[in-house]
Length: 119
Image (cartoon, rainbow, N blue to C red; front, side, top):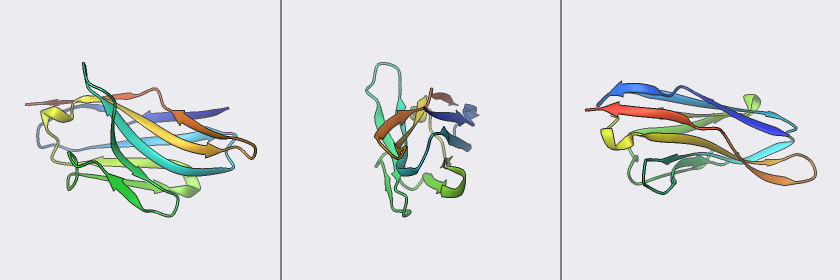
């Protein structure tokens, strides 16, 4: 069983910064892609950013230049540094990881952390 635990969400004023963290634990042999998605009320879940084990990243157009994704493979942890936050960044942010437990690949999700940006 694999768990993803997110932290770092909260309330911030527009223009401010937050850093999200997500740590994977449990039966982990290898982690391929790690990423962040978000879902605002009444909207579909969308990709924010993702990073593969080698370090290549894919960042959504709406956050490009403001958000940076990184990972610490030794700690099985992915981070999302969010700068110049806007009210439209308000959403629940979910961590995602594709994990190999030595027999099966699984697509795992965290419980979500709320990010609220006030204008």
